[in-house]
Length: 464
Image (cartoon, rainbow, N blue to C red; front, side, top):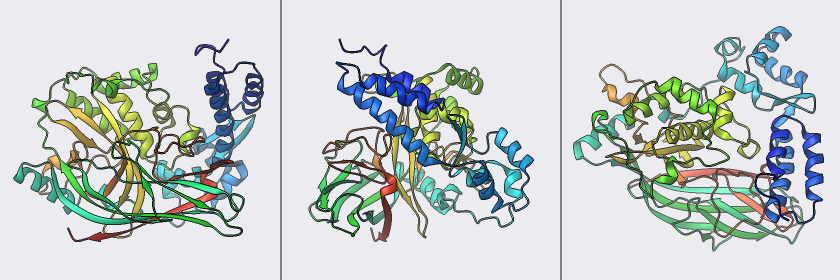
C-alpha cells in the first residue's frame, strides 16, 4: 500500500540533512528506496534529497584552516581567538556534517559584509560594487516627480536589447548527445514591461514559452561535440517602465480577500510556512498596528535591517524564509521570501518577482524582488533588498520609501512566481528549484548543474 503523506520518509530525510547527519540520511534513503510499492513522487523526492547533500558539499568546501586562510588574505594578523569569536557570533557560516565542521565557500567574504569590526580590519578594503539604484539618485527623483505630475504609475521608460549566453563546458556530456537548454526570457507585464520580442537565438529557432508562463523561458537544443564547449544564446528587446504609487497610508484599508487573491495570503510549503518563530517575530515588529500600509512599512524596515550576504544555492535550503529569519543574513531572494511570508501572515497579499538588473554603466546582476497588494491601490512593487533610501537635503522625505510601492526602470522580470514549471517541461530536477534567472540545462543522462556551465549577460540601451 502506498505511503501516506504523514508517514512519508521524505520529511525525516530532510530533517537529518538539515541536522548535518548525512550518513544517517543516506542510509534511510537507501532503506526507503528498497520498499516495495514506493510511489514515484516519493522516490523522486528521496533521490533529490540525496542530490541536495551533494550540492551542499559543493557549497561547503572549506575546513577551518582553509576558512582562516581566506580571511587572512584580508586580515594578515588574524588571531585564532578572533576567528573563533566571529564564528561563534554566526558571522562565518558553517555546517557540521557528520561531525566535521565545513564552512560555506563564500563565508570568508561575507564576513566583511556582516561585521563592521571585521571590515575595519581589512588590509585592502574592496571598493563597493552595489547597484547604482540602491542609492537615491535622479532616476528615483524623476520617477516620483513624473508619476505625481501625470497621475500615472508607469513612467520614465528604458528600451534595451539584452543577450544572455550560456556556455556548457567541453565534454560535460558525451559527444553527439543532445543538450536541452531553457534560458530565462522576459514576461509581458502591463505597466511594467512591454514590447517584448525575440531578436535572435543560437541555435536559431528558440521556442519561447507562452506569455502565461510564470517562469518564462526560451527553449533550445544542440548536440555536444568532442572537446568543444556547447553554446546557447538568446537576444531580445523590450521597454521597461519605472513605477511609482503615491500611497496615502490613511486611505489604505484591509484587503477583501477574493478567490484571486487568496493564494497570496496562504502558506506555501516549503518556503512560506507560518512557523511559531515567524509569528513571534511578526508580533514583536508589528505590535498593535492595524493599518496594512503601516504594518508593511514596519515589516519592510525590519527585513531591510537584515544584512545582505552571498547565499548558498536555494535548492540546498529546506525553507528559505525560516533560514533567513535565523541566519542573521540573506541575499535578495531570501530577504524577499521572508518579507512575503510575514506579509501573508498578516493578511497582506504578496507575490514574487525576479529577473536581471542592469545600469547605465557596467553593473549587472541577477535579482529578486516582489509585489504586495494594498486596497484600494492594487498590486504595487517592493524591493526590500534595495530597501529604504536616504533622502538628501531638499529631497521629498517620501523618497525614503520609494521601493515600497515603486520600482526603477533598470530591471527585467523573467518570473512572476517561484518554483513554477517550464514550457516545455524539464525532465530532471532543476539546478535552481526556486528561481529562474541563469538558465537550466539537461541531457538524457540527467541535469547539468551550475558547476558544468557558465552564463553571461550583455546589454545595450536603445532609443525609445
